Image (cartoon, rainbow, N blue to C red; front, top):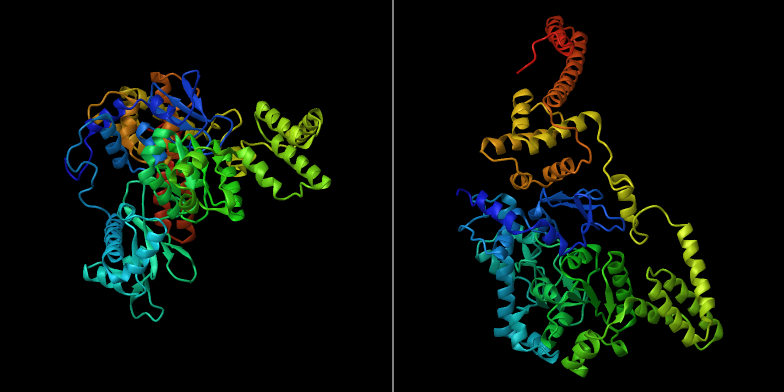
Length: 617
């Protein structure tokens, strides 16, 4: 095995060991629809199912966003793995042995080498900062601060917390002595260049350092909290080759096993909250590191958890942020609840005041529903001691309740409003009905009202009935030929002899080339196995789209010949058009000899199109 390539037999064993219906079914609720299974796409938000799984072919395909491929591709898209990473992880899950070095390229690319160097440098930096905190005078004050915040040595070691001194050249010198290119270190966010161009200095200074790992546990960035007065109070590494704060959650690597086991993720605002909660026994906690919580974060969590619990600070800012994050989970179709911390406390402060047992028992394990939280939050905007304020609150609460899909939920919360504010229940129900009727009348076309980005996307990418629009004629002809070729070796041999690489669509020509090679290696027709040879997302999408065509004529000799001849005809028409344009350019340039030569070629092409020339075999 050269170059660390994963052996074909290992890939096939992984495909056999991981049933696509079972794998997809852990994330998507699938229902039978003819020869397909259908469900809501896990890769984009929708209410009308456009995601299909074809068990007999071992592929998935979404008509909305276009993602498709084998079970390996599904895991790649879901978890963010590369192909070798996905195969390696799936092989380990199935107990399939991998040869040493499989999936590791013998000659990594320049970009891979840069990433590798940056990861190494971040590992060194984390150890360096940690050592300074635990063992030197530089870190004495920072360690005393952490101790006052309830951080034990065990926690400090486990989370590799460190300290970046005020002096601005310690890390720079440390990395420079070990041969790291400081210009690359600047790209990775570890150092910064001086404005006068005289060198580099440490990006983080006078801060308690929290290393950030990716989903595989590799060190990729830092979050720093300033020790003394100054701004900003919190500072994260800038986006880099390794780190994008919109796609990374603090502690996700450590929390993922417990999230999968419990089906629940607890979302905090900051890394200190995560660490203190971990010490209290909350092992499924993650944080967005004080930055904006994004739809990409929601997508990450939706793949591994069934439910989210938001545990933000109890002050007004924290509760407003919780309201926004809860809406994002709801828009993604993920159940969410919210922890109500009393007295404006944050999780770290609550644990320090009431203890870890109370935090887990009374807070994390007793969240309120998102609807209840919204109603509580809504109260802050109204003077409930005044009749006008009470009336306005009830009307606004009814408008919010009207947006609930579940009739039982609407009934429950309307009854609560009726009892608390002594409004007739029937009056509230009528108000709720009228609001829903008006909203239904004015609803725009699309999937989710809360996700307009998806509506516009699907209006153009997916027809309402869930089928792809028919492609242009030449595309359809080539797609039909490829469909036959993927199911029939003789058809592939015929097309190879007749057309070779004459496909006009680039992706079609590439898939045909893969098919020729696949059958040349002695393989039998097997769509799933063929898919594993592509290892290219765009080609997989195209191939899956072809295999998902609803109507395909039978693969007869006459049909094969007619379709192949049509491809050749279109190729000749294209060549003829190009030659005519070339002749015109030659005539305008006064090159009579060149124009005459091209005229002969044009005559040959015209005779071929009329069927008078010998057809190529």
